[in-house]
Amino acid sequence: EGGVLQVSAALKEGQVTPTQLCQRCLALIRSTKFLNAYITVAEETALKQAEESEKRYRRGQPLGVLDGIPISVKDNFNTAGIETTCASNMLKGYISPYNATVVQKLLDQGAVLLGKTNLDEFAMGSGSTDGVFGPVRNPWSYSRQYKEKSASKSHSEDEESNWVITGGSSGGSAAAVSSFTCFAALGSDTGGSTRNPAAHCGVVGLKPTYGLISRHGLIPLVNSMDVPGILTRCVDDAAVVLGLLAGHDPKDSTTIQDTFEPFELPDFTDVSKLTIGIPKEYHAPGLSGEILALWSKAADLFKNAGAKVIEVSLPHTRYSIVCYHVLCTAEVASNMARFDGLEYGHRSDMNESTESMYAATRREGFNDVVRGRILSGNYFLLKQNYENYFIKAQKVRRLIASDFVKVFRSGVDILLTPTTLSDAVPYMEFIKEDNRTRSTQDDILTQAANMAGVPAISVPAALSERGLPVGLQFIGRSLQEKQLLTVAKWFEKQVKFPMIQLEEVKRLDHDILQHQKSASFS
Amino acid sequence: PEVTVEVLAHLERLALVDFRDEEGVERLQKAIQFADQLQEVNTDGVEPMDSVLEDRCLYLREDDVTEGNCTKELLKNAREKVEEYFVAPPGNIPLPKLDEQETSLQGS
Image 1 (cartoon, helix red, strand yellow):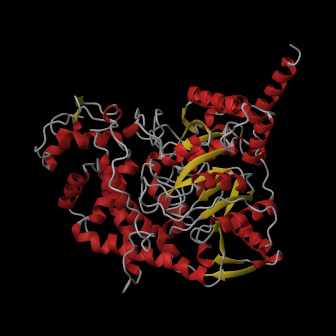
Image 2: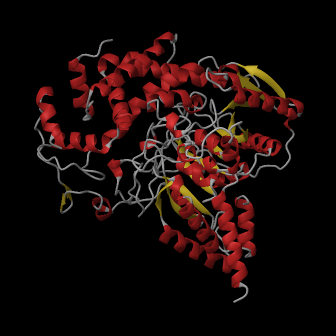
């Protein structure tokens, strides 16, 4: 169960072939189907890509470190020839005519695209429960660690209904990486949608600086905040993927033009030179005692290693959710206008007039969450409301962004915060509240980083009392991913987060071993 | 601010999305209430922020055609087309008024 670099080395040495790797992942996807992490599994094309990769390895000419490595992509990224649905009826059956830039970059490196992962419809949500293909189940629900903790209290019949959510909206990607069905996955992050599920699924979730990675081909939610997110099992892997994806894209005018230098992370870091900021506003109402304690322990870890750890203030933190609510719905109202049934996607049979066709198409194609946001957004953009809501929110955004600038300017290198308020809740509990309420609660610790465009990463920190993963978040200065990931890697090494014990993975390894044994006799 | 029936109708017309039922309207009311918290923040003298990249120059490429000629590809995803045209139902027909609207949309 190594990281990308180890597997890459194994591929180079011929210890395993890209085809074996691909087949193993596909088998695991099949045996973990109940997680509902994948919307589309591109088995044929994946095997073909693996075959091509194998030919390259045999010639001794791999394209790079990702050649032959199975990856998966959130279903809001366009993938040529493969259905892209955004988990919505609006795009069911939509076959992308092109690859998103980030997808193209991965394919150009020889990565094997296994499939498209599940999400909340149009990435709106914090549970990965609101897509038309159903909710994603957190693999940890089926881990020995979680089962051991819940056996003591509940009856066996509850096991089926006891499963916990992945968080969202990139839940499918997080579950895919967490259950070993791929080595890395793409997510998207607008309010925390990569970091939130990463924390709940015990994987690394990186939100890069806004403008660092191309959004071309990522079906937009909020143009001024969306970024492609990277989900991996360790920080080193995130650095590898980041190195391959970052950089200016002429097809996305919001990518910065500075040259990006890919980097390797040092194995040993001297954190005594660092100043770690603990923003007091992130001690948000509802933060579980468990996570508070973990956060404190983490701060101590840095302190004991000689780092300067100080309390700081980001005074406008609590308004970031309200601000997001207005700006997000406003941009959504605009972005969703393209779905009218004419050029692509669902089209209603209603044929009386253009407008009635549009209206019926959108009524049929969008779920309540999407429609609700479109209507709210249009409200805030009305002439009589524009100044008081939209412009006001934009002003508050500046205040939030400058909070970060001030803190970083005062000598703080990295901020340390929790990623979520609690560990993953059971699905049955999660759905008791509506999507907006949940998003409001769950995004509170992650959203501000999107407002300010700064990079942030969630690293698995420990298991909760219920046996579920809890992550901690590091937030860095704009474009300082190297420092951010260096610190994250140091932390990762200190905490030694346990590996998930999944029956399906064990069984697969056992089967492969048996197969190899019997093959050696034939 | 009270959301009047006129505003609701106006929003449905602008968004081409309907509230569907009481719940939809309530959802909007709650959204507005939530957004009103912004008024607590003092933003005197603060400029609105469009983008975190506001201090940078936008990248503009050369005005040269570098790709295109993919009409067939693009038409593949459209349901109704004739030759190289997307086909829409007749335009310039206004949506029925709010009370008539229920029946019209119920048909779909």
